[in-house]
Image 1 (cartoon, rainbow, N blue to C red):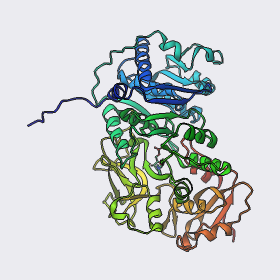
Image 2: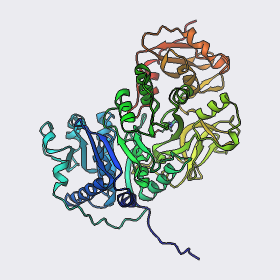
Image 3: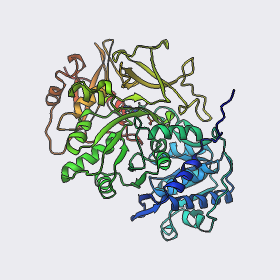
Image 4: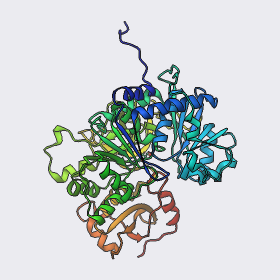
Amino acid sequence: MRGLMMDNGLTINSLIEHTNKFHPKTEIVSRSIEGPIHRYTYAESYVRMNKLANALFRLGIKKGDRVGTLAWNGYRHFELYFGISGIGAICHTINPRLFGDQLTYIINHANDKILFCDLSIVPILKNIVANISKVQTFVIMTDKENMSQVELENCLCYEDLIENESKICEWPEIDENDASSLCYTSGTTSNPKGVLYSHRSVVLHSFAVCASDGLGISARDAVLPVVPMFHVNAWGIPYACAMTGAKIVFPGDKMDGKSISDLLISEKVTFSAGVPTVWLMLLQHLSETAQKLPDLERTIVGGSAVPPSMIETFEKEFNVSCIHAWGMTEMSPLGTVGHMTNSIKEIGNGNLLKLKAKQGRPLFGVNMKIIDDDENELEHDGQVFGELCVKGPWVTSSYFEDETDSFTKDGWFRTGDVATIDPHGFMEVVDRSKDVIKSGGEWISSIELENIAVGHSGVLEAAVIGIYDKKWGERPLLICVKKEGIELTHDDIISTYEGKVAKWCFPEATEFVLELPHTATGKVKKSVLREQFKDYEFKG
Ligand code: AMP
């Protein structure tokens, strides 16, 4: 017997229709690319989304067509998220920090019909425009006045495009399983791969983002997503804000410590999310200027491992809870969040910090297991580690027009992360499978060694890679960026490892560099470090 409930599809339009109707006056604030702070309400945004959707129809966009965006976090990008998906087309967000060849590959592979581009990204677009001939229309996301500075021929102006359109759009019927958005993985070793989200997966994921054990976004929040809208839909935050009517504060293209802290303070932001590198810049700026963050209640940090010292600084110096989360482009991205449970509240402070530094507990909707080389499931004892595999309604079932097989025989997605799961359900990423250091038949976690190094007061950032060693196979090399004006030696840093890991895990040597290479999404590019240090030999 079938249930007798209404069969209302879970579509992205329903999110913004809800907010327009029930939170029309809530503000969306953006640091615009042109300079000034831009403010409007959800209701005003909704009108412009309708106009945009009508403009897309006029340009010939149909259901299933891909429409690309090369843009930072701002109100026009937000309008595109809903205007494109709302008419059944696919909002393809593209990371402008990628190399030209990768951008060309991604835009051609996705077969984008229209490309929307922020003013400050036009120089990047200019470099690749000759190689993306299938794109029919380019739209620069600015107004008439600022179009004069655009040195690219035959492109439209966003404000002109929508100006004379009707404020009412006949949104088409959309099946909840239709594709809504497309995002490519960074692809450090092979070509980037496309992950194609559906309306249903986005809405279900938004429920999880809003749940208290998720990111807990609510109508009482002012939310500043530092994580870019071209990186896994800014972790789903724009959709979650629309679901709840939370105030949104978009930082534009300014991610430096001062710009972010100015917005956090002036807009009374309560919740923010980003990768550790961005928070490092913020914390450094705050310590230099002796500023506090009076309204910020919590920050979610993920994308790469969060050092325990960062969690402590946020909590002790700023009274901000710093919550660790883990996920992937292939998972929309949210998989685990490090909220505590009643059963572990009694454990002592030192252990609590260890637990908070783990990647967290799976949300309902994400099933998770760790497996050995023969795909046997391993125990959840917090010790045994294996490859982490996931399943769920917002996990990819295959890549977009790509045959890459990343699945187990029984259909779980193989994450490529090596992890433990403890009896409390906390997952801890030991390493990426290709980054783990194999020394004398044992495994050393590069993440653990990096976290300890950045716990030293003189270290700004650290990376650990395996270096060939005749006797042990591989030994860990620590590569460090020192804080300004600090003198430091290998021996100084090594003393911080005492009592934290076994002696044979200690880094064999330390090399100091001025900066570490980062990927377009803020992770340390270990492939570049491995290449740079490929002939490295330990002394003695
Ligand atoms: P991306 O698809 O670019 O978001 O990258 C996903 C990968 O980033 C994961 O498979 C992990 O290797 C890494 N990652 C994401 N969050 C964390 C985290 N909190 N700790 C450690 N690694 C992480």
